[in-house]
Length: 256
Image (cartoon, rainbow, N blue to C red; front, side, top):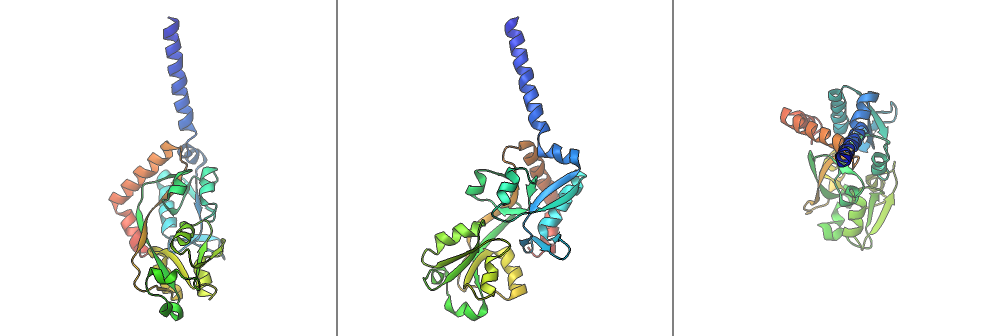
């Protein structure tokens, strides 16, 4: 009888532990508080763009997260962050989820990711008056070339690996690598085809000639690594919205 009671007690403790773990899920926190907190940088056009005059956001990510909050039956709160603290914010519970980010091995060590819903290719860009200096990826890897990047982005590590002979200029948010090139303080920056198309239209940057896309990156949301309840909800929500055409419509709206 003591053995039976012991087994029963252990089972009850296991069940209680599982219930406690579920109760601590971000999903339940969101539903209880009525607020979905989303970390967003506001500097990745057309994904997330912050208007400093109104402190409001617009973009693909903003539409996606607003829709997620609507389906959860809660309001959305956008929490300002930057690329070097993006992962830490979700790990420490500053927000429940982030907007779009590249899936990378470094980030996967400490945070979870949703299923991917976009793919980005990486290209080098420069200004028209400097375009004649470059032809192909190898032409960038020279000591007289300054390549700009932003601390905390996946581009930072790529640049150090791809252009060891070049000068690397690292800026911190809210500064951006492309701003250094536009201002003439650097020669080249790399970014995704997603952002590159917007910057080309807005600032006239041009893709370096004869460069094939590199390092295709899967784009997804960052989530707490150990919160499978919340991860499952978000992944199934993505599947539902893909089938309904929501993601296709939102991509088309923002030219993705």
